Image (tube, rainbow, N blue to C red; front, side):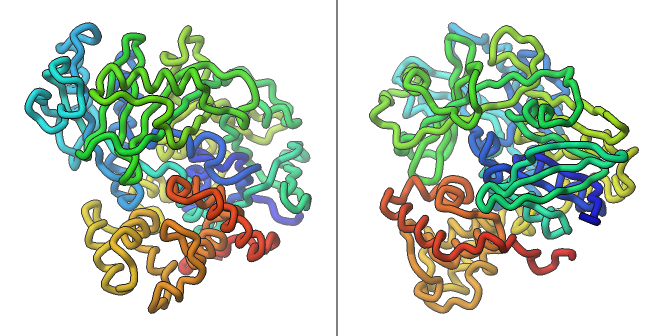
Length: 514
């Protein structure tokens, strides 16, 4: 009760956790609460891309695209374990966007964003190149290949939260802000742990509303703010099928309705297809991929791939609600992906509400949020821009070093299979050895739950990454749910329930501040 935080943040998605990390690294005291799990709202249901957004050039979003293009390589360099370069093939379709327009767009894509590490665009002869083989024979003869990056979105959020906590931030998941009030120019948040029902009050000088799809509900919790901006909820659904082709490139397919669909190699043995764009009305927590959307995605790729994809091929679906700023666009696909801030000072205490944004620009969004709040935060100017230079936890290695790290893990822990070592390297980077500890045999890692998941890893995720149930682990901290049976996941849930201490929060890791 005596403590007053410099900054309180509501929302544990990529924006909230990104702001928490940046603010803590600048010396501010930070509190963050998330009513569910980290990244559970929108941030884990993306298309998993760190990309400039080629199609946004059509809507003249040049500033957004340039900022996103610059961020690609910055994020890749601070988190090379969870971000990797990916080449995209764009087949040309005579009935849609003309060749000159695609060439112009790709020229801008290559040159306005300060590309240094990623390879440039090239033309592709689809009749002879390996990337043309999965396509319908004779229909597509030329295309383009360009660069973007793939990201493990939920891990990106968890690692930002972990780094924020290492720098002194207090991160509370499963904690809902039930009421927001002001007293003597200080924000008072009444919060409740949704598992234990324990209640407490948090005080802070500055409040950030990073509620995502729930941004307006947060404002209605007694903040005393009449929001001028509006959020537009747009549903994006994805399907996952067994691997559709052998090469490592992704595709960007143009549809007759003007939308685009990505087809992306996923988790080694699968292919990810998405996304849809449709306005969503209802509880964001209840969003699901509809039969109509699944059929739409199947038929969209059926216009390009020689082997049809049917709803029966789908092994997993997921859907999320993007909380876009409502700019009045007539179609969901045309609504801006840029972010908008609303700064209010009811009663004198500042509250910053965030509308929109995308995974790729979360770090810049955090910087701009703190710039807007700098008059109210003593430490905001210190270490400005530091998040683009300091690696995220486990990311202190070169962008080309993942194979070497995998080999090192196998040398140090000879009982690990190549698959197991590679998965740990890509998930935890240099912190994989912290998880493995002094183990000499696979049995030393404790109970095995299937798909190379062991008790040692589960314990690490519970004590260091705020995981409290099987869903957190198999669908957010990893995607092992694609490989585990329902029985294995249920057994994991039982084990976690038996070993979880609801009163213990993840402690500061070695090197973290107190």
